[in-house]
Length: 286
Image (cartoon, rainbow, N blue to C red; front, side, top):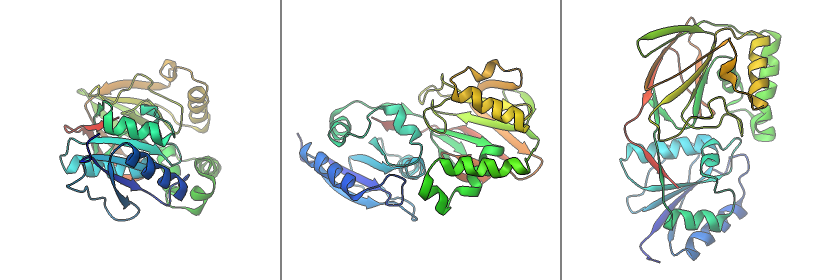
C-alpha cells in the first residue's frame, strides 16, 4: 500500500453519537490500511480541504457531511469521500452501506471504487440527501441548535411536531418546474433515497441520476400530514395518494405566502422564495 495516501479525517465532537474511542479506531484503521491521517475538527468554522489530502473521511451527522462535502465541491477536487455515521439520521451514510466498522470503511476508502453523487444547489448552499418546506422545516427550525436535539436525537423533531399540532401552520407554496406550476402546502425534495432515517418518500431517487425527485402535499392539514407520514413510515408508495403531487426535474422554483424556512440535510439553509437545481460538480463517495 502506498505511503503517500493521506486521509483528512473530519469529525464533529458535538454529533449525536460521537465518541473519542470511535475516532481512535478510525485513526488506527486508516494507519493499518497504509494511510497517513490529518485530524480536522468540524464544528463552527467552514471546513477547509487540505491540499495534501488524497482522501476524505467524515465522522459526523448529515449537517457535518453537508458542510465538508460542500467544501470538497467548492475546492473542485475529485477526491474519494467516506462517511462514518455519527449523527442523528445519517442519510447519506445509509446510501453507502459501509456501516460502523472502521476497518471496512478504511479499506473501502483507500482501495475501493466510488460512486458519483450530484449535489443540489439551494440558494447559496448545497445539500446532498433531501430538503423540505412546510411543517417539517418549521420543526427543524425549532430544534436545529437546541439542547433537546443533543439529548434525544431525532425524537426532538417529534417533540417539535407535537408542539406544532396545537397551532397547526398552513401556508401556500407555489412550485414551478418543467414549464408547469403547482400549489401545495408542503414539499419534499430528494437527491438520495432516505428521509428522516431508514424511510423514503422517493425510493427511486439516486445520487447519480441527475434529477430532483419532488413530492408535495396539495393540502397539509394535521390529518393529511400525519397520513402522509404514516404511509411513509409503513413503507407504502406515498405517491399513490390523490393528495400527493409527484414529479422529477433538474430545476425547481419555490415561493410561499410567508418566508418559510428551507431545511436541507437536517439544517435550515435558507428561506422561500428559493431556486433549487442540480449542481454540475459531483462528489465521489465510496
